[in-house]
Image (tube, rainbow, N blue to C red; front, side, top):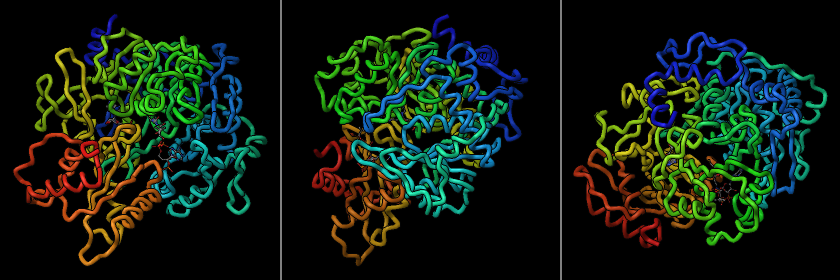
Length: 632
Ligand code: COA
Ligand code: AMP
């Protein structure tokens, strides 16, 4: 069957479609109901089914004869460590570490926070939680102690898992002080912290009370898989929303396993035994789904890469890894390719490696500009596929489903709706937009398996943010349009979320921090276009009257405050003092207009604007300070 027929079947008969897909994974007990609604009215998949995600990823693969196959290629150019671990080896380590967690009192349903760099132990930690039915929450290493504290207070973990250090290019980042500060700031008190000592940077454990990972693991008895319900949570992954408080996206076990297994073969065209590389970080959803779970559940070998696209050591890093492990499917963010192109525009490094194993390149996480897509296409001479998804969905919603059929590629579009997703573009009143006209990108309920069933401990926010804006639909937060062939073009967020180097950040959260500075009366942080990272946050601040502080000192202090609270990953590097902000007569700050000025886009100021002359002031200031692509 070809794409159109499969997609049609998936959205008109979702229960029959997903019942068939559920047969591709191994259950302890088959689901009693394929689709149901819980007592809050939220859709749930595979109710009554019993399974274990770690079992699917490891034990089942070994039982199928994959014990000696490489499960993880660990490639760390920053530490010059290159290792490979078979399925049997990962299973042994995971069962043992699951025993460590169990001995520390972690039980089914308990939460465990993981704040670790890209080392094999982080995957073992995630899988060990899954093995005993504990709920992990991985926090990206680029976040500061405050962000960790927010997540500790929301998830209320029994245990925090960490390592002594991460490496960013040639910079060593000690993790223990960040974990200590996060724990000290959080109100919730964790029972234990377990730390993995890396050879090049040891943490002083005695004064911290942290436990040594390796010592505990050495003496632990392995733990068996604990069957969990399909609807039980596997993990919580926090993502930025439109307030300062991150949202805990919940992923269940059953829908997740079925959706990921389906996506590997039908979207990515990957089969058991293939080598799959997602060059991301386990702290992001791409890392959860396509570094850890999907490749292992499918019996592929996954690549865990602790390096960057460039300068580790050069712009040939991608091609070197693909050649070394004979990668078949490669997935990364457009920023990674932009970084390579900037350093090696003619693609000279690519000629040094044999990358004939590579069948497809997938790009996601941010808007993919056409010139990057075409550059990659020319360089690699394979299909380069832009596809669209979110932390909330956990797997692609728009794509070119190469495992079903390779559809014609339309640069600028993230493809067609993936089977299971009935994607529509609506106006503010909920009416379908004509082809070519921009509106809100929504998905008709029910969402397919694998997508978030709820927010952790916050059903009201789930309802208000995702379900209430367009009754009967899930609101993605993105704007976009469809063309006459059914391709969807994503044009960007409709809210205060921005995307910097494929990393999702909240400008509202940055505004909260900036406005806490004693000199600042009010401020707006907007995400403006940037060549390498796609977007960059810039703060515009109005001073309190009577305050005297130099612009340069204030800018440096604000940059430091955001770095300390959110972390270096916020990439907040510009702040400008303005006399006033553009506002409507009712006092609403016109952030979109500021963005448009910086990006050099034409726009019609709203009739409700308080004073139109403020726009010229903004334009002059941005020109003077070279803020935005329009003023370079
Ligand atoms: N732990 C600690 N700090 C981290 C970190 C981590 N895991 N990841 C990033 N940071 C820090 C960086 O060191 C940098 O700090 P600095 O301000 O002290 O230099 C800051 O956060 C910003 O990092 P980044 O945006 O990654 O910029 P960069 O200049 O270090 O690297 C690229 C630029 C293009 C090489 C890099 O952004 C990249 O590899 N992008 C691809 C993105 C990607 O794969 N996204 C996947 C999402 S699907
Ligand atoms: P995250 O939850 O971090 O994965 O970020 C999700 C957001 O990234 C989406 O809501 C989009 O705004 C953006 N995004 C992801 N993939 C694409 C894509 N292919 N094209 C355009 N925007 C994308």
